[in-house]
Structures are given as C-alpha cells and as structure tokens.
Image (cartoon, rainbow, N blue to C red; front, side):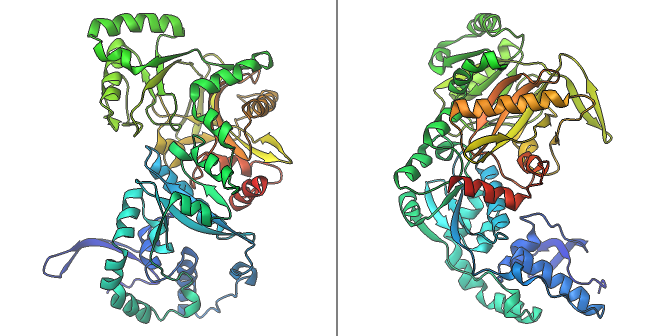
Length: 504
C-alpha cells in the first residue's frame, strides 16, 4: 500500500479485538546491535549478517543486479580453532553495561577466523545460562532471565508462526545460520568446568574483584585480563592509591583521600555533619569533595559534594542501601546516580581536582585553560609479556561526574582521541604513556586494562583515579578508538584477538 521495499519497521498497538492501530511507518529501521529488526529476525534463525545479506539480495533482485558472491573466507565457520565462552550480566549496578560489553565481544569474535565465541549470561542469582542467538539480543539482564524462563512456553506458542514467516520470506537454508536451542542453565562451577577459555565481560562484583579470576586460576582455565591479586587491588580504589605512591619520584601521584567507616554516621545530627565537613575539606585540601565506594565498579556511587547538606543527603541514601540517588538531590546533580547493589561498609572521600574546561560546542573544540590539568582515560595492552600504553583519550563530562551512559553508550559522551596537538604537547602525551606503563607494572596488571587519571598537558605528570581490570568493551567505548590510533591500526576484532592471545 505504501510502496515500501526491502525492509521497514511499523510502530503501533495490537488491540484486544485483534486490530492494529499504527502510529508510525519507518522505511529505514534502526540498526543498532540490539535493534528490533535484528531481535525479531533472530527468532527465525537469522544472524545480523543474514538479515543484511537478505536485504541487499532483495534489492539486487528487484533491480536486475547479480548478487555478488562474498569472499568464501567470511563464511568459514567450521575452521575455528578455539571455543571462547563469553560471560556477561551479573547483579551489580553496572550489569547492563556488562550486557552491552559481553554481547558486543561475542558478535565481534563471530567474525574471527581464530575463535568461536559462545554467549553465557550470569543471572541475578549467580546461575549461568548458555544462550541461543535470539535470546542474546535482549537489552537487560532482567529481560534475558525472563526469556530464559519462558523459552519453552514461548517456543510452543510461536512455533507455527515462525514456520509461516520463513515460508513467506522464501528464505533458503543458508540464509538462516543461527539454529534455535533452549537456554541451558548451570551453576557457575559447572560453567567453569565445561569451559576451555572464559572471556570475562562482567563489570564490578565477582568479575572484577578477583573472585572469578581466582576460581579460573584454580581450575587452570585461561581468561582475559589481570590475575586475581591484581584484580582485587584494582577494585579497591584506596589500595590502588597506596600502590602508586611509590611512583611519586616518577611523576605519578594520587589525590588526597580519606577512608571512613559508615557506622560513625549512624548517630550524626545536622551539626555533626557541619563539623565533619569542616574537618574533611581541611584534611582533603579542596573546597568540594568527591565521594565514592571503595570497592565497586568504575561509576557506581560516585558524586561530587559541595556542602555539609550534600554529605548528609549522600550518607542517608547510602545507609538506606538505596539503589540510586534521584536527580537534583545533590548540588549541581544533573543525572541519576546509580548506587552499588551490595550494602557498603566503607566510603572514600577524595580531593576534587580542578581541570581545564574542555567542551565541544557546534562541532568546535572550546578549551579554557585553568591549571593545565585534564582528565584522561588510557588503555593498555600486553605485548610480548609487557603492558604497552595506547594513546590516551580526553574525557568530557556534561555534569560533574562521567555517567555510565557517557562512558559506554553511543551518542552520549564526548571523547577526543588522541588529545589535540594545539592544546596538549606530544612530548607530554608520550611521557604520560611511559608513566602509565610503570603504573601497570607496579600494580601487576596484565593482558589489558584501562586506567583513568588526570594528566598535566605540559609535563605529562599523572594523578591516578582508578584502574579497571575488565574495562568496558561496548561498541562505543574509547579503548577501541585508542586501538585504532595505533600504527598499524588495530581493528576491534583484532584488538579482542590480541587480548585473548596475550592470556593464552
């Protein structure tokens, strides 16, 4: 009726009487990793690649163009050398980032000639599910758990419909490359026992604090990233700061910190918070303070406090074990702050480091010099047994603290890789990279990692914020940008292969 060709996406409502009320007709569907086009086509056995091939084939046929035979090498699926079990999910505040990371790693490795990836979900109860292609494209851990539990019931209900859709499409067997199977549930121990290699795509919790690493070490199963001791150290922000103190002579520092047990705040009244605040800013050495959990992932529970009232508000939410702090509860708080899912015992206060004001306005870089410090994030990749620094990225936050979305979700945050030459000396960047390699060595990091820091734009001196031993690997994370700035370039699939090779 509308004259559409090849593919489209219609939005609307299915009414109780079976009628459809449409609100929107999209001749071009969204094509993100988890777009509905891919989710729905996966239900009949189509991979992302199958869908795109089918669309192009349809367009060629309609226009009388011979469909080109793709390189046979791309279709080789049987020559994979090693099975890689990609684990993602969990129950931390960063579990949805973990889903984006893990599924992206799985999809990218599907194009590898060396490895055969299989997707596995760690659910909220620490069970592990082996997922079929179709159920790996859901957006959240909760959705994946729900579809795993209802898989048999859904298959019974939809089986006839799926066959009808395949018949209508006239899809050939080679155009449906992802066979359906029911998700398989197992314990974490059984998952480890059946694995030949585990790619840890978890963030925070057991995937980052050394627990899972220790289990894999004991089972002699290779895995990506640092070992259990270095992972445990990297997870503890206070101990990380203590570990880099020995590098002060090399131009590597840590911001002033204060560790505090939450118990002392349980009897506090407003006047107590005022007294504590006065002593805190004197001890820390800055008029505002960063507060964060000592041992959680890279973004959960981090806030900037301006007043004693901010401190009181933050502590109240923490003592209640709230899952988030709503927007606007703290001074200049523009986003919701996700809080750790495990009740905290200790928190850490940290000196606020003022930086140059860097903004991108109408596609132009605006740089206001204040004190020659900028916030950076830098990936490192192991090569010949030694951690090598990648080119750093400048991170630009909309608010006071980088949100999870800005760090990992496409179309939100701004990152500049490498730092622009007119503002940041190349010699400073090179010195910062050398210093970061010393940090990785001092902490015993291996495989790959990402370290966040403040960098002096003239001297390359560093103030270390934290080390991430299982950094985000979502489609938008800057570690891929940094790998692409290498000479020769490392494309994302190659980069992931290098991570695996270093651990094997």
